[in-house]
Amino acid sequence: MALPGSVRLIAPNVRWGPWGLVPLASIIGSVIVLRHAAGAASVVTYLSLCAVPALAALALACGIRGASARLAPLVVPLFLLAWLGRHTSAGQLAAVGLSMLACVALAVLLTQVAPHRWLKAGILLASLADVAMIAAHYLQPAQQLLDLTTPSFDLPAFQRVMFSSVAMGFGDFFLAALLGAVLAAEGARQDRAAVLTFAFALVFDLLFIAIPMLPATVPVAAALVVTELRRRRARVPGASLAPPLGPAP
Image (cartoon, rainbow, N blue to C red; front, side, top):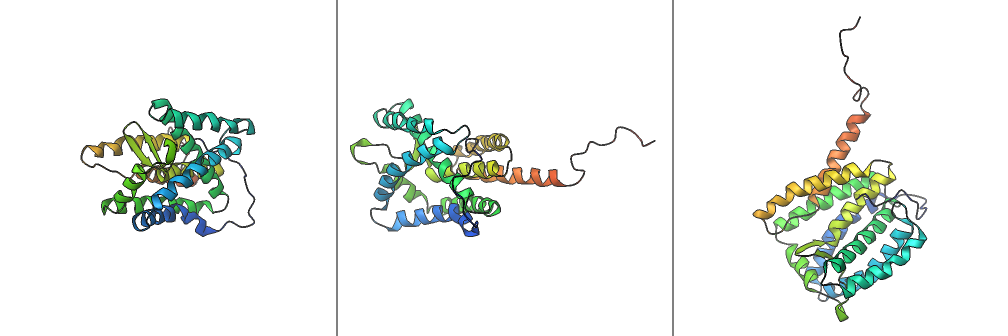
């Protein structure tokens, strides 16, 4: 969440509101396609194999804080480590890093074609859809398909994010990156939102004691709500003024 920078990758003439619903459409659409289209998991696997390294290079070149074109070639050793060391912690971390960078690139691009208020609404709606589909046991079969599908030659499977025994969907990382990109574009502090998200995630993960699968988008949505409430309160005239220390003379 703290990775996205405030950069201009493209210069659209008009920001189109419905682009802000991409997070919602991507979560619902991908689950429906995976459940009902034969071979969809394989298509998604190879699409992510091609797209993630390219997007990660874009993020290193011009999407993250301190980006530089000199950093883009780092994708090559990271990809090789994720491939050849796929059974090691270092290899899994390399794969996670590439996925995070790809999410940053997508998020930064999206902030430049959609109004930020629409993107915030899209984050909240995507989280609600995530909760609803998991509660209805509609998402789980699609996620299992993605977890079990791997490319040929044991190439990295970027369609999901795995480290040790922990598995998360690519969309979970994307939603966090999108919140960070929106805050960066607005000139707001990303570090506070990142700490909030981490704190919410720690508390939320306690539910794993009783529930085997949780929507990882919920801590991101909760951090967005708290951040927005804080900003609205700060804009109220006199809200940040200190109370008087004594009676007026």
